[in-house]
Length: 495
Figure 1: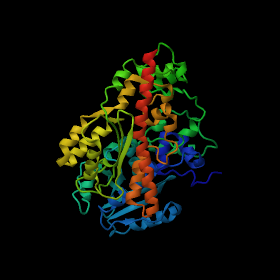
Figure 2: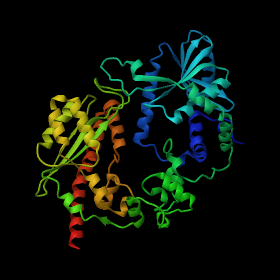
Figure 3: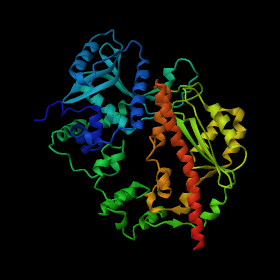
Figure 4: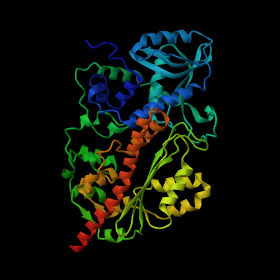
């Protein structure tokens, strides 16, 4: 017999089940199959807690139900006690249970003695469909418990708020939107959905659900690697472009890229992935020759705090906190310049000054995306005294990504032009597997931890070293990619 507490739904279980019943089953009965939480995911969880605490401060004298998930009955009893006390203006993390569904409510604000506003807090800067599902379930449970609601609301970050320094303006930091009408259509099917998902938790084995596009909407499932471990290397899901093509091919019974019928319409890139052979454009050499020496290879890492830390910044505004520049002269000699802000301060002027000194006034600036253009333009706006020089730098950018996309393809790219795919394919000894940090999102999360939370100076130095190694790998990688591509272009022209 499966314990009733195991078959009990929660907000997170409900949302997982709406996405995929197999995911719900694994979360409850086989959590060890999940991919290990990375720095990015942990940072998102930490950010959500930080935003939740800030949101509570908008409701002075509110009371937190402190009992955690291990003490759910005590949490239910404490919530009932607070509901009955008319002097309590708001309840945070209130616990409610109705017909096998248990929820914790971010904020329940008292309107009158026995009427309430339900407020769900989200770290997002906009309302998403999954938020409405979340709020609908809470509304369903509270109404089932006899709570009289005047409305259901979402409270989320206002990206237009500009922090001026001093105490946060919580009225401006958060937007509150009433969603009572929006959730109305979600409430009618909820009893059947809840029943169906509780039935999933009563199964003896996981439901048979094929992996597909739903595995990444609204969230990437942590069981993706487990569910796809037996898929072929050239599974059609890995075909680049719209996933509508994946759905159409799946309906036709096509499983691998090699099995796609010749008459099926594909884009140019998709055709190259299907052909699975190296392709070198006759224009590659000429394009590579367009760079001017000394060639700079530039990469930024940015930090985007949800709650702004520095005057003049907005929530989620990308702040450049690190850069790397590998400089190559015509005789192929190299010099490496770099910068990392190691303390919690607004580094933008310092970044701009050091960067302009490193870039000088001559040579192309090789980048691997349009992001560097955005960062430089943002820097020019933030540091107007250096705006003219920064805009001149923008005019020297040379995008290696677009060069590879237009003039070169290799089967080992697996259809992706990310430098994380391209570099290991063309320069196998210069991948990212040996680094602690292997993605930009993880770098941002580790930077946040280093400057805002870590107090051990030895650990801070270790994290700083990991950040510097990662950023330097990106720019050295661009140097080596240009060299390898040049050799391939010359080889192709010789034949």
